[in-house]
Length: 593
Image 1 (cartoon, helix red, strand yellow):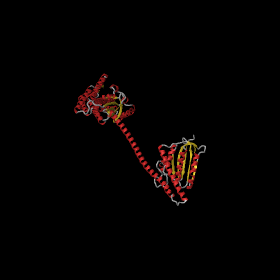
Image 2: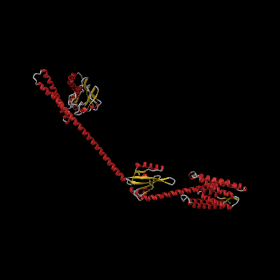
Image 3: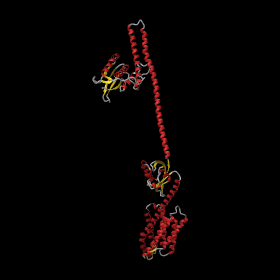
Image 4: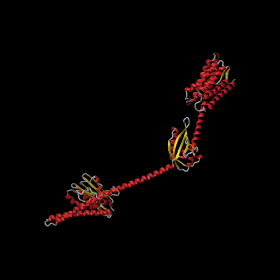
């Protein structure tokens, strides 16, 4: 008896495996919708397997036989669909009718419910493969065979309870697991075939892709999802100098990408693996075997399986190295041209400034010559006019002295103008030299004070000086004539423009300067210097007022001469002015050796 059960189980197992082979080799290998004839043929084959199953039952107890038609029909309904399953149900039903016996109605009911449950499961659980299909298949097996267990009520009363006792354990612990195992086997067959199909398609795509790319001078490359090289064409190998065996299976980024770009490109590649998208028209350099850089313009796509799984990337590249070199040459040429343009702009600006300065110099010279003509003509007219007046015989002694004084004043004025013109000419031609001797600054300050005190007293303004050093400390090594000339010019200006108040001059020692220096000053309470005049008044041919009808005489060369002398001595000169106070400063090194 046990041998009969074992033989029956083996026979049924073999038939169920044949059933799964039918699914693998006939059903799933034909893609797309099945024709009616294919479905009918499948139904007939399923019917044959079902009939053979019914013809090879096994007996656990006398009078009660088992076969696995319920497993066959429920799984057929789930995997093959309505037409093949209904045909199998009809064929096995007819055979069961022909067998007859006391279990006829239960047998027919099992055939109908098993196939129907499989079909209903297929209809209302269409995505069962994408979930936990192990549990789905086990649940299907339990549902089918629990209903089969319930169908024992269709047996004659005397057979109902014995049958109920006998089939309970096999249905739960054999039939339901067998349903699950058969379903798992067929799901795996489906997945394996899909993988084989995807691989076949990929190989076919690669073959076609290779044939196309090998015919042109473009780079073609395929990378696996870890960045290793799966394919590259001969053109890529030819321009980089590698042999195929040197690069196949190697990491693209480690072999071909320069160090400074490697990390960035690897991050972009693996990001593309995750998002299923790659940058198109992407440009980057690659290295040849000898280390030369080539520039490639890539167009990248993701390679995917039918289940949308990213398998790697495919890239087509164009060698744009020559274009990049030409572009670089153009950029360098453009940069050179731009630099030349900037240089030309600078030269033009300098020429424009030189032209403006020349024109301004011409205007200033014209104004200066007009001023000099006016300044010389005025005292000359006075000299000539009063000389004629002296010829009159009726002049009193007092009038004569008065006219002589005017002539002397005009002569001195004209002499000062001529002296200034000669001096500025010498300065311009570089014929003025510095002669340093030891001198006492305090004595020079006092001498200048004595020179102007009577003239200033006549104007009714205060006049004072300030010496910051003791006589023993005031002896320095300098050109005292230049210092004397600067101070005299500045004090003359102060007297000219001050009508009330005071004039003060002197110096202080600036110990914090490096080297130490004397800072001279001339302070007055005259009209002051406007802000825009503070720099102009030291230039050649410039005055605070350049009009011929100004109220003050002078050639306007005193400050220019003073500035030249101060700079010759190694110092600087400037003016600070506000309402009611004007101070001219100049410095000279405190040379005591």
